[in-house]
Length: 94
Image: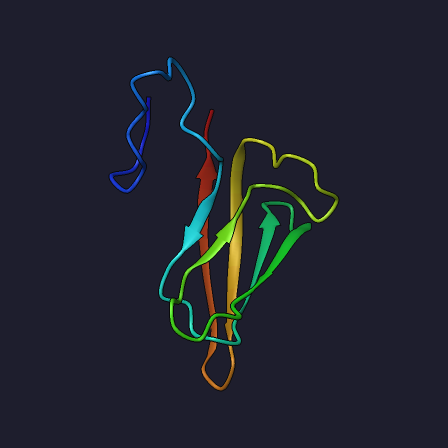
């Protein structure tokens, strides 16, 4: 099983699952826009950084149509006002 050190531990009453599925983008400047694309270039979700203090933007792994995102590779862009654009990639694995 793959987990991240920031994931909460399972409760003693839980036998499976890790809770809500989400990805957290960190250190995102206020006013930034995150676009998430399939590797084919299809836009599946746009997120906005509205919080001026925290800098974290969460994605619940749902598309704009509120469907579960499929497992696989994704490309994201972070458009930062007056700075530029950052491009990255990540994988959703089962």
